[in-house]
Length: 220
Ligand code: CA
Image (tube, rainbow, N blue to C red):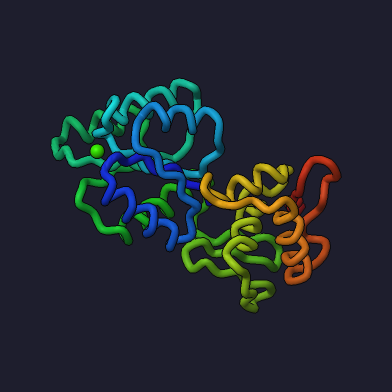
């Protein structure tokens, strides 16, 4: 799952990127408002973690612009400013949640999961599809109650398809969710992951829409 981290502090940013990667996110880390706005205009993210004190302008302007475009990307605000007014301003500008520095990485990760859950309208964390279940908290997949071991990238492909069931995901959309900008994209990687997923989960789960992408159909 691809996450945009906007944080100008090099130590904190580096620590957050490493920590969030361990929690299974693909992290794009940017350090100022201008690059964040450019990235938001051209890339797909599942989440944004946004520092308010950025070198060029306040993170609040990034947030306001995003909401003015009608984008409902879940946003968690990070700030060192500890006044009630600042918190209210952050939430009123379209922030979904709020953490004061310093904070605990596990708490951040838990809040991000809660944001994703609320955003997708799920009451609990598990995505159920027939006999297949995916639990993002445990990073676990089961088929008819039996655990299925998936490498991180196969897991990420499956998660994106399941979260968007009924919608075709293009190959580039799937690739985007897997790699940060510094990552390598092998040309047939997605086909390979899909092939493995079909072998492990059944050949009829993921349908190929020729020339467009892949889809997991919603169950009627
Ligand atoms: Ca800052």
